[in-house]
Length: 142
Image 1 (cartoon, rainbow, N blue to C red):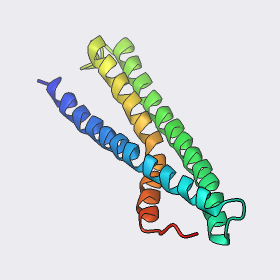
Image 2 (tube, rainbow, N blue to C red):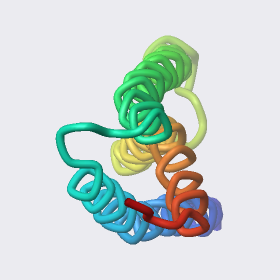
Image 3 (tube, rainbow, N blue to C red):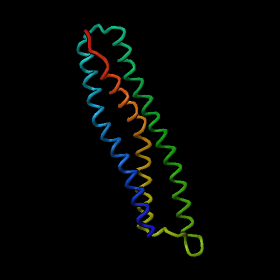
Image 4 (cartoon, helix red, strand yellow):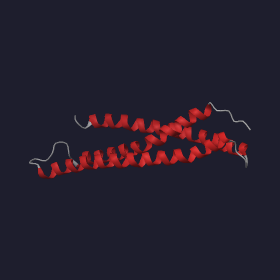
């Protein structure tokens, strides 16, 4: 039956999003703990290395969130166009478009929302996990 196929596809997409969220939930506290400890050790006179790290904290967040919003906007626009076309076909084509019953349209909208969320999460996830790996190799030295 056609309804079973989207469920399996949606489950894979959901599990990828769940994996990203779990990795982000693990990486974020590690990065914060490392950076707070670094700030405490640096005191009022941070070294050049510390200043670079502290400046990078701000710049990387700005870049990641711009990429996040841009990705969400682009994905949202693409999906809005597809969903609008599907709805138009269902209204105006003789016999309606196949597979556009209300529950299936609701499932499409839910999947679209998850796709937009995933696009927004990708840059933040990528940067946070990279920072966690990088900072795990770094020694805190006063």
